[in-house]
Image 1 (cartoon, rainbow, N blue to C red):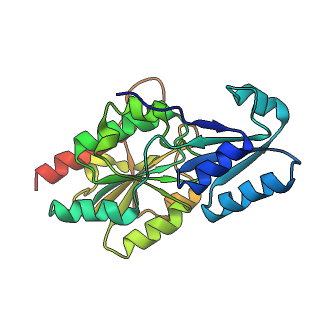
Image 2 (image 1 turned 180 degrees about the vertical axis):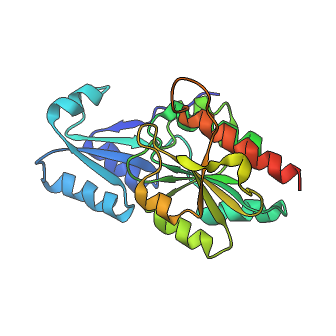
Length: 247
């Protein structure tokens, strides 16, 4: 499958991308540039709650593929995002307890793609990612997912903690991956559940961890103390699968 480029450069192309309804993950704008065309782009970005990075010209020059960025570069999602309600509907249609994977700041697109692939194979009903500070659905993510991105809905939200609170009101319990948590084999991971996986370097953020009902630790017997984020997702997701199958 061929994926289109996800970078858009220049004021008019970026503005038209916004106005045509394309999903823009990140917008990079020349720091200090506030003229009329740029202000128009920023207003469109505000309407879509797009994350804006103000950067130096050298950074834009490095990112540019055409050398004609005019102080504006946007990254456009290779795939459309779902809504959180779509994920819940996915579970309802299958008459299954919701199984949602929430990613708190996964930055590596290869990791995100691998997690989408694992989520699909483990029967998760969808994935939730933050709008800011994380990889979006780029062409690299799509390729790394090995096609799973076509079947597993991915929703993008402004606030992970608030989303967890909203989903808890609908009867979903949340477990986060944490080295100081209870051993995963000792936890009841059945029923409506959300699995929270943190950033590659820092793990689950404090505020998000506080919203979770319990923490799960993966037993480790080697000489290092952590697993790759996508591998950790796979281990915990399949413990959920095992426990669900044993019901």
